[in-house]
Amino acid sequence: AVVSALAPKKTIEKFLVACKKTDMIAVVDLIGYTGDLNKLKEFSESIDVLLFHSGIDEGSNIDYATKRAREIKEMFPEVTLAMAGGLTSKEILLLLNYGVDIFVVGRYITKAQDPAEKTLEILNIIRKQK
Image 1: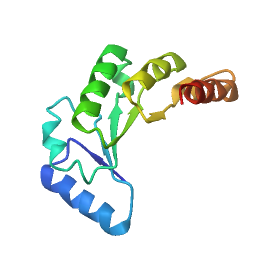
Image 2: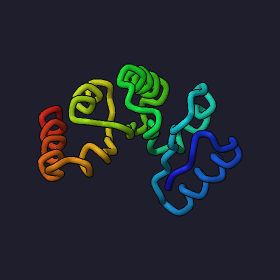
Image 3: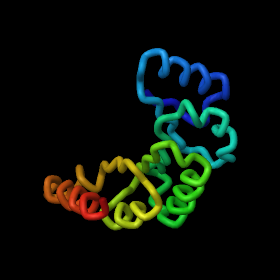
């Protein structure tokens, strides 16, 4: 289940309690969230995945993504880090060095002339790094 980091603190708290009760994976989506991650620190033991998510209209900014990935991994070393938004094989190769655990890839695959080829390209990059 997913909740926005932009949600009120009480909403996030209720969401995390509900996930725990129902044995669901708790994902906190950081799309549009440019604030201090300390807001989420008190929930770190209950968050399973932090999703750094750039919106389509924001474009891809790899420098900001790597900075944010480093910051998230330092503050939340026990949390799984997911990245989404404008990812290509080039960005994935770089982000693997920043502790990103999950990559959500959309347009790079769906808009490709050969989606299967792009999917295999990404899988091979990830496999080589492991």
